[in-house]
Image: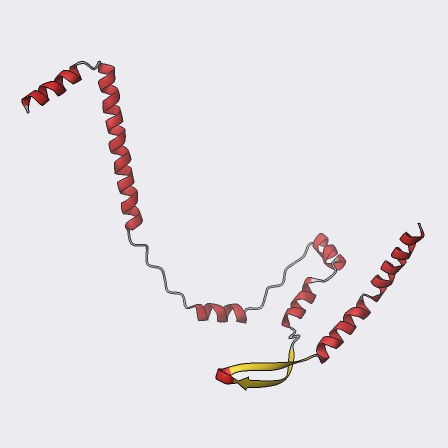
Length: 150
């Protein structure tokens, strides 16, 4: 052992003061990095703060019961709403409409329900859409006719 110790001391004597200082600085930096990693791991393993239990059913009920608040529109927004193809109010009305009606419903094996869809409302709806956009369609037809003349 004493020969190993003499070899290490002889090795260290060959270094200059700047070399020893650099090696000590690197050793200190390695110790700091290792301790930082250890601290980060310990902080990740800590128990999270207890949060208050939230009942999702209550949250859903409050959301369903609250009506959307009215929004005060600026002049620009009012103008855009008037120029829009479909307004926000129309979208809200259509959301509430149920477009599918069923004529009859049958239950077959293992609780599978089969429903027959009523097409009456769909036909009436398509007639209303056609009457709404008839002027636009006529205008497009005139434009096509005009472009074919050139």
